[in-house]
Image (cartoon, rainbow, N blue to C red; front, side, top):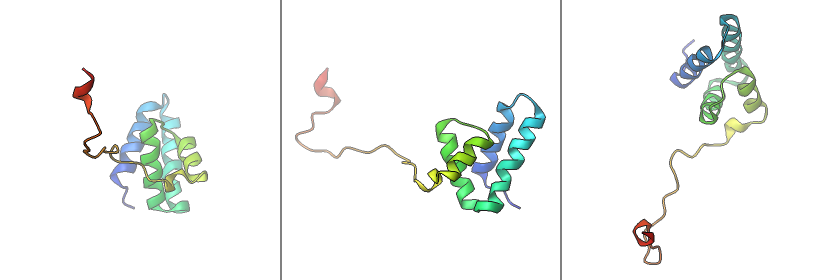
Length: 94
């Protein structure tokens, strides 16, 4: 089974966050088991979502998947305001 780099990065962060190795192993194993239940794509999206919130753990991924938050696409870039003559810009307010 190949692990996507985003999932591997998330698992590494879970391992860092947990105090006891047993907890880290159980959390990591549980997170990886979601790929069999919901599929790789949903797990990848859930890990990306949780990482964007800075939350690491099994329960976080479980909640994201149960509430289908992984289906919501994260905005990769901020909304860009188009140039227009009525928009003054940052230099105007100095």
